[in-house]
Length: 112
Image (cartoon, rainbow, N blue to C red; front, top):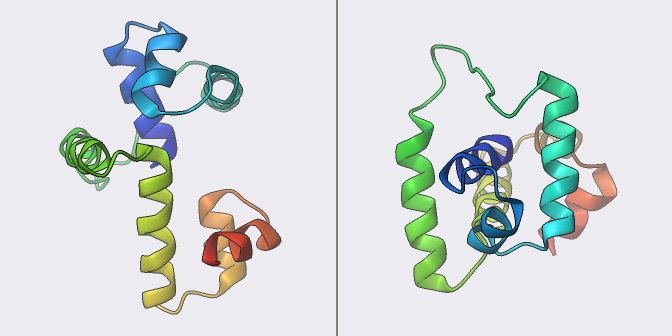
C-alpha cells in the first residue's frame, strides 16, 4: 500500500520529489530513499498489481482526504490503519511485520 501511495503521489506531482514529499508530509530524503527502493524492486515507479488488487486510486484518495482532515501524514495513517487491522485479525506479529516490510522490533514499536 505504501508503494502505491508513493507512486500515486509521484505521478500526481509529475515526478517532482519535493512536491510529492510535501503532499505526503514526509522529508524529501525519506521519499527519495523509498522511491529508489521501489525503482530497484520494479525498475520504475509504475508498479503493476494483481487483478484482484483493490482499486487503489479510490482508496488513496480517501486516505488523503482523511489525512488532510486530521493534519497527518498519509503514510503514517495508512501504517496505523494496517497495524490496527493486523492486530484485530490476530495476525502473527512476525507475519504482520513482514507484510509492512519492517522488522519485528519496528512493528512492536508501531504498536506502542
